[in-house]
Every structure is written in structure tokens, then in C-alpha cells.
Length: 265
Image (cartoon, rainbow, N blue to C red; front, top):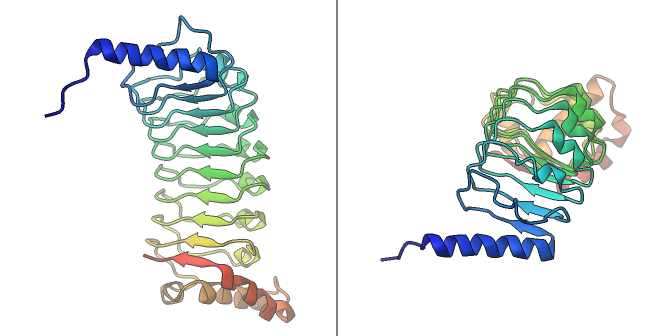
């Protein structure tokens, strides 16, 4: 049988992690079941990476919001209900993972940060603020497993966005504006979407699209089941019929779609 770790050993281990953080700038207290911030007696203001995941924090520790050089913050699997406005002090922050918490609101000021990766999956978000359009550097957005019903049109301004995961929400419509993005991966599985907008034939850089568990009507489900080429052939033909696509370019465009892969499992 495994012996339980002695509390003294645990305290020494935590103290060692804090001492290492002072020297390295990498603050890692993941998986320690902490409820309170432990670093009050240490100068961690030079921290560039902080991992506070898998604890029991009910809020983002105010001290962490004073780590001015912080570039990466992992808050996965805590009990956080609110993102404090003090987070705007982190003007170097490019990576934020606050998934598997209890957020019901994504605050507008969050998008004044230079984020490249934002992961807020497995929360209780009913919507995404229009201000997300300000996140010009955002390359990866994961808002899966929430309660989102509508995506704001301003998401079409995320001209650096490469990966978008909106899986398992309550979406019924995909915004046309997403067709202007340089997406490489798009996952909208497990929603209530019946139609892929015809404008999505313009997603020439897309390599992976996941659309299973939607009541698809256009393209018809039988077309979706046939996979990548058939879906984009359908969209291109529809675009030709409605005059939004030059049919002379149809053949060359289909050749490009051979790089696409689609999951329908």
C-alpha cells in the first residue's frame, strides 16, 4: 500500500517550489489542493509563467495579477467564478487557460490583453462579448463545453485566428463572418447547427473540420457523411448558383480542398 505523504513533506515541497520560482521565474503549484495563495513571503514579481491548475482557488489571487512580466497563466480546474479587472495589469500575457471553472461571464476588459491563446472551455458561459473583436493577436480560441447560444459577428475581426473550438454549446447558427478568417481547424460538433453557410467555401486554409452531432440539413447529412471533398463541392456549387463564386475557378478550388480532413464520428 502507498503511504500517505506526510504534511511536513508537503510543506517542504511547496516551500521548495516557491524558492525555485523566485530563481527561475516559473511558478508551479499545480495539483496541491490549495485554497489560499501560498507565496506571500516570496518575491515572485519577476514570474513569467504561472501554473495554478488543479487547486481549489475561488478567485484568481490578487498577487498573481501583479506579476507584470507574466506571459503564461494556467488556472485550469479550480473554482473561479469571476475574472478580476486587475488582470489587465498583465500586459505581457499571451496564454490564458481558465477552463473547468465556474465562470458565467467573460469580462470585456479581458480582450485588452495581447492574448494569443485563450482557453475557457467547461465553464457556464451563456455568451461571448462583442469586445472579443479587439483580440487582434488571438490565434487559438477554445470556448467549448459552455452554454453559448450565439457567436458575435465581431469574431470575424480575429484575423490571426487559426483554431476555433466551439464544441458542445447551444449554437444554432454559424456566423458568416467566420468565413473571412484564416482558420486551420474548426470544431462545431455537438451543437444544434442545421446549415454551414455558403460563404464558408472561402475557408481555403482549413485542414480540419469537426461537425458531428448536429442536425445538418445543408449540406444534407448524407453529403456530410461522405466527407471533405463532397462538403466543399456542395458549398462551391451553391456559391456558383447564388453568384458568390467564380465557377471558372471551381476546379482549382476543389483541388485545394483535398488537404482537408473532416471528422463525422
